[in-house]
Image 1 (cartoon, helix red, strand yellow):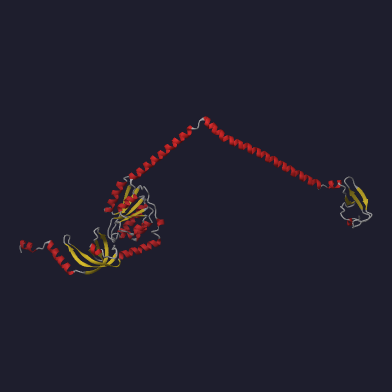
Image 2: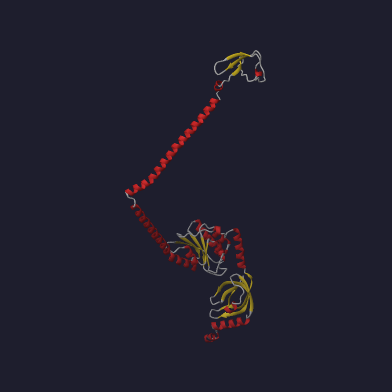
Length: 408
């Protein structure tokens, strides 16, 4: 066979693709398919683009706006669905996909269910508690970044940090962010940053991707490393609609890596302007107080100061004189009161003096032998010698008669 004949028999790429398109679209029209939604990308026009997958394979899928409007649930990554549609070949790219006409929810996907289970477990352990959250420093000197050294996320962060504040230092901690080795790699970089105190704040994240792509940031080792980090951690995983368990364990969650850079690094110009405004306000206040002090000092002439001193001194002296007089009067009253009490006590003592009683005509009768005072007639007897003591002198007598009955 000549080369010309071979060329005539060869199929073009378009012809082969056309044959495949005819065979597939003719053989797989209006089929039912069960799979897990992955890499869900809603379009602004209303069309839904995503992949359907199981444990071994995946297929691209599209659901146009008219059909998507009839859905009774919001599709998202990890949702297990049953779809109906037809296989179609997109010739310009040589790709095949399923065009979906209807879709129903079959239940949560394996990955999403696993993540939700971990989320509940970590929440019960308190790893997501607000009490564990640390404050992000207002002006970090050094920012650490745990991400892929070749990814777009790192380029976005570096660009924004340089634009906002070129005085902030950057430490890049290169890590795998996808695949089986990603979680240990991320964990190792977080621990290194803490062991050597490499930065003031740590950004941990990556760019967008499917639920499987972001799975390393929901692994247990990564979540625990973030929760136990002494350095404040900002989680920056995927796009705004993406999420991972690292978002809940981190001290701050950023919707994107770019947003993490903006939240972490203050804009130098804004900070400088704030400082300048504060300095201006401080100078203005100081100048104002100095002027007020100068005006106040002008009123302090020697004459005015003497007058003010006299105005202060005179009431004090008057109060002193008043208090002095009151004190003297109180002391005089106190002394007089004590004198009266002494006189009363003296009078009482005088009245109690036996000599005073004797002077009024009373005498004391005692037994002449024993000296015992005779208080009752029964205390003596006929013939006893008595000693009588009047006010002056002594009288000796002898008992000639006793009677216990008073004789008038």
